[in-house]
Length: 243
Image (cartoon, rainbow, N blue to C red; front, side, top):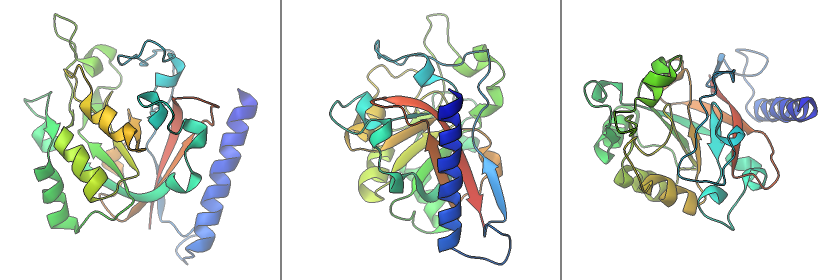
């Protein structure tokens, strides 16, 4: 574990160095004004969970994590096979917090994306899009974070299938993320967003943190998962770089 952590740290540091060398700036030695950690710390509370996949290990779904295309689509990239150039990309933070109050099952719409673009211009092609719902404010309470009803059905926001399709096909998103347990909203049973995106080699980032501190546009995201051989998912460190 220590060796893997050291290797992951080395790879992350090298990626930041190379990116900074390509994009020099006099504002700081790295060329960035700030680095925001979008990762929850893993602790003994164990917010990991299994999402309709009996073969997934608890460790793969622990804390802030990545789901590789291989999770729901065999034969596609596992975590260690995701091309490294897809792990550093323009960052888009889609703020839908105003829509969540009174509607825990809210599904992010194409209209939400259009609203973002009306303010920030078109989402750059090849970006990683992460939805900010404000749900990470519940992180310290497993009960509130899962938000299950009397029948055990969880309730939290997610993407609509139409929004996911638009981002993947219309904006060529490399990754889709959110600050909840899943890119699909809580009551989902067939996980249409997950199945659609993973089948098209778009990775997913879940349980993302601190999006209130990340720029809505103009930032760069560094996605640094554990390089788990043949893994369908795993813990990930996510950094937002701002200029």
